Length: 396
View (spheres, rainbow, N blue to C red):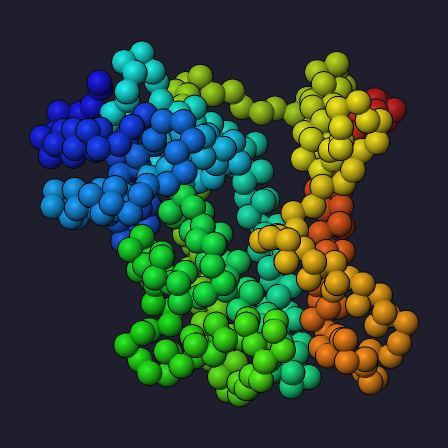
């Protein structure tokens, strides 16, 4: 065993390791400049996906009795998977400097990637891409408010808040809550980010009503139930959505800055990335590596021996029923395309705009943003220096 000498920490570690099959324990912090509390991150051996109700209650009792700290429990496999995906919660929280217990004396803990300049840029680009993707929902809500289709506008605002909460949960808690209820998301994240837990103030009757309307929008619009919301109520919800956007953006950037300060390499051993003005075999290898990373991310084979590549997308499908709804949406959108968008519709398609939205969302995910960005970086970093050098040589 290997952990720090603080008596309270020792007592908690001993209780946890007697109760659970623990691989590692890390002691981190929430990483929020306006609200900071210690966070215990317990990594269980193997792929233990959850605790029984009895075990969960016993763990909660340990932390209630011994400390006011927060805690999170994950399986080893899940933590490794999230580190591979560059989840900032794990990069920050599971840094070697936070390790206070390990089951194997010679073990060095989870393999946490260092935040190099290139990695930081990739993470920032991924975050900006996600913001761009979900901001289309806000644009759609504004469009339908202008058309006075208030139920559909409410649905789009609900979807924006749900996706935003899930992204924030991954960054601040390490795992998202799989729920369509905004109220549940608020409760889930409140202990770690109190400001996100009071976007809708549950002590104010107006906010309670607005939150219920927002959560009802998902079920009512999806299952064609009667639903009513006013333009004024939508405007108030829109203001809360914008407030949510600002908080999440600040949290993400703060967490990224904290991660940059924690690196697995000493500062003196870091190598600066220098763009060479001349073409070299190393440049060819770098371009090849970038293209291979892009292909691995965006293309796959259905079988190892297949000579055909298929395009990957990130459609969110929660189960077979959702998949069927999405397929039906695309088919209905094709039918609509052959008619007039504002004309009378068959009873099978009572709300065509929802189906159009689904089809367009899928089409949006097929646009080659990553491919074009990769090409632009290759041109900027490798092609332009060579072109400029050739021009300078000609002038001389």
